[in-house]
Every structure is written in structure tokens, then in C-alpha cells.
Length: 176
Image (cartoon, rainbow, N blue to C red; front, side, top):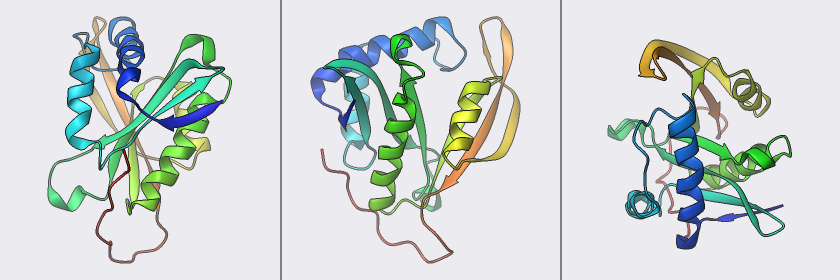
């Protein structure tokens, strides 16, 4: 298993996996499929701040994780949101855990204080994964989105990346 930073050439596989979750599940709240080029263009302006990581198993794309803006106001800048997506064939092999573990190390090293994950509910597997990685429940927004013919709740979980209550240092860029 190899965890590495995303490359331009990864976006075909990333878009394909993301589109599965858009089409088939309520896990991703998007309703319109996205192209690799659209995903690449969304990532480029934020790539120095928010990492995307990819997992390869024996040279085969197994999944990805990313950090991105949680809220836009300045005081929120030390808390990104995160997401992880794993190919069906690679589930239950530690891919999500490995991706997230690496992501949290990168985020902490660049000065982020905490990270938030939104989980469409119910999703017991995702809740267990996040809680096993140190996330704690932070609240639920009832009927947050309409998808797959029903209203869906979204729970939020948070994990602190930096100890204590010290004042934040300026955020450092993530190498591309």
C-alpha cells in the first residue's frame, strides 16, 4: 500500500470513484457527476493549502482523501473539512485509515488545529472509522439534504490535531 500526494493523472480515477458515490449513494451530496478536468480545476487554486492524498495498492488506484474549506470566514481557517473515498474492491483493507492517518499528519504539520468530517446518516461504518481515529460527535443537522428520494441527516464529527489552547501560528503551505 502506497499513500502519496495526488498527481494530475489521478483525477480520472478520482472523478470515476466520486461519480459512483454521486450516482449511487447519499454519502456524497452532489447530484450531478463531475469530470476529471472539473475536479482538477477545483483542486488547483487550493492545492498549496489543502492536501489530496491517493492510495495505490500494487500500482492500482484504491482511493483518495482530501481536506478542503469547511467554512469561509477567516476565524475558521484553522479547521478544514475532510473526506475519504475507497474503491469497492479495496474496502476493509485499511485504505481509509491509512489515507486519513497520513492526511492528519500533514494537516497538523502545517498548523491546522482541528478537522471536521460530515457524515450522511445512517452510516455506521463511517462513524466507526472516524471515532476509531479520534473524532468525537459534534452534532447532527436533521433533513440537511434531499437525495435518493428522501431527506438525509448529516452528522458532524471533529478531531483536534493540535494540543492545548495556544494561539495559532500562521498556516504553512502543503507541498505539491
